[in-house]
Image 1 (cartoon, rainbow over the protein chains, first blue to last red):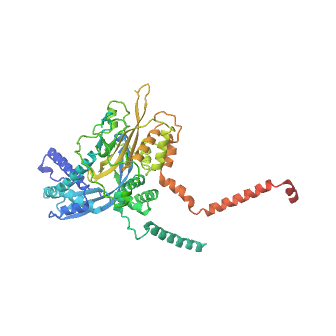
Image 2 (cartoon, rainbow over the protein chains, first blue to last red):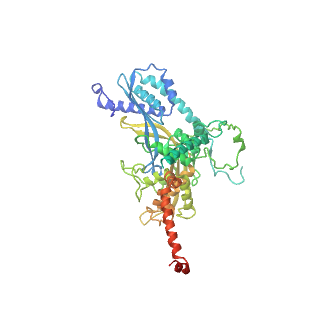
Length: 169
Length: 367
């Protein structure tokens, strides 16, 4: 199935505005996905329950597969195939027409479906704000807290092997 | 003959039942859960993911449980599983420079921007068995300190700015990347295929090969430029979505080995490099990989290839423990027909030998 983004308001905006708007929305969607991919399906579902959701249907049933992960020679050189990872994906369409996609590492199809639903909501003019405020925002805060805690624990193990002068300490 | 086959089937079935019981062990002891394996035997899980060539902690933990802790058997199970799923595509190459580092050390530079970070390491432990771990041990809460927001560039990137170290080989955008899971291996193999092979290669084999280079079989004077371990984000260019989709993050270990320099009439001398990258926290693996990667560049760098670690056909054909164990372990499966024909031939040869070496008197008597 070939799916694409539909932009149907060509007459209402200049093409430059459309491109800017499109890029802005793409950045928003990507930022939302980056948070959702780190959350558990249960957490996303619990947050979504606080929103009166519009009607929606599965455009693509959750499906598990593999993605070959690539690294780069020396970290910054030519790419090479490192090994695969399991990935789950799904697509959801709102009754208002927005199509959302969900991709996540792992084999949790329900999580992929919930990400797809959020992605569709992010694009919706009626629900975009609510999903950011009630779902993605709180999950982002949680993620940042976890990361900050891990960073603080890591920072405590920072050393300088060479600052000691003989006779000191 | 048919009866024997039926008997074999029953015996096999019963053997598998017995295996299931042996796997479970004493049933008065609580059963180990996948979460326990994943959380408390994390480095075994990392190894199974790396050599099974499949990043999925839960599956690797299941494989370890099913294999009764036999990691090569677990790797075999994971490899077999990956053949059951379709491949959606390939990820964007991960950016290890943007890693959220949990550990990062350099043996060559004392003052690296972002600092040296020990993280969770066995280094500097005394390797004394700790009996308290056997008695319901609760660790102290980790210490914390203010985290720096300074970037942690790769050490090789810093050295590279002064031209002291060779830069990484680049490829053109859209150039094909070799994949040994899709095409049979041919020699000579390029570095992309070599690194893919080493990344899924057996840690023990690579360790021995890397060690051999240090002992003089393909010596190349290695230093650890940097080892880093932490989380990197993975993105996948999904055609249907139209942009690179974040998939979440994976843990990786990267080793940058800095090796003896090389120059020519047209190029100023500079350090050369070997590279190691693996899933999870796999330092021994990535260090060994980097040593062997460098040794395998002998041809490219105009070095005389005289040692096993410099022979890509030797290394790449024997690094895979699933292939290796398959060929070694198949020897225990029934070879009766093969063996019967060998036995027949041997009997014939022995008879001929006996006849040829019989004492003259006996020969005469026989005649």
